[in-house]
Length: 470
Image 1 (cartoon, rainbow, N blue to C red):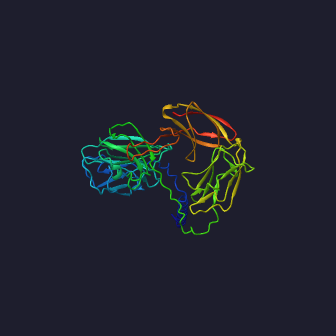
Image 2 (image 1 turned 90 degrees about the horizontal axis):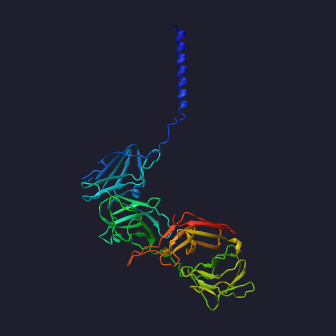
């Protein structure tokens, strides 16, 4: 091979190498497809001690997963049964999960560690939902199961922030004084399940998942069963209805504040009119900034357009909202009216009055502003004293006692209504709460949330067939 041929070979190799470098550089800009996205959660491949081990008193649990993991919100997710005084320390590194147990464990007891949604893989965040590890300090694993559902008694809805609690039946005061022996969470459908329970008898409760987990405040949401529950390998489903025994008191406005000595320019209020129209189905309400009282020497007058006083109306202060004046009257459609408020007719606690006599001019709505409906009822049980509730924005707007196979409603404001069914035990037409304090204990009245809505259009009549057993 002469020198010219040798030089050609060198030049060829140089350009070939340069092209390869350029091609390689371009290829690095576009990443490979990498295959399908990982959608599988991590799973346990090994544990020390082994899952479901017997006759052990471990101080540390080591769990190995099939891929790298992270743990999040462990304090909120981890449930140890039976409960421990101190929350175990949990640390996730690479594909390992380490749990350090601080408390001394009880003999002959099955312990379960349920991690909820705390464990997920690093890359895609796939959650190992309800991953549970279990062992026993005795010679067998307990296999008792307890399951059921929890709904809000007044609304028929589900509250997943609540927990279900088991306390020893021989200690009636435990729910007031002690942290729960066992507890579990409620899923999005209102279902709860206890696993690995010993064969024993417990009292069953529902409470908010707060720090104390005790019924130390009657304004807390709460539920209980009338009789203790016996734990077996298989059990029937139990339904609990949550109630609030007492409402939280609203802080009243204090009239004796730093502004009390300032000169008042007169009481101010807001009106419940829609524009200047009065709803035929509602009272006329005037809401003031502070609680008020009426001066009988200067009565409030509801009049026609000639300021002639009408009969059969009432003017009163709302018993639950002392800052609200209520005018009640059997309104007729498209009628012009005057409401006369004499200057001294209304006073607050500091004897402030209106700055002048006010005359409110308004007109009642027309019949065409409302819709009508005939509701055909299937499955009514007369023994339950059932009441059909029409709900908007979580508030009961209208109620109709079911006394026959149909309900005829002549006037309803347009809109969509959620339908609920109240079992009105005491026949007073409204939902009544329960009580656990004192004797006898009382369960709340039950409300069932129906799946069929009611649609109302203005100046339109519709018919709805409603099967209340579904």
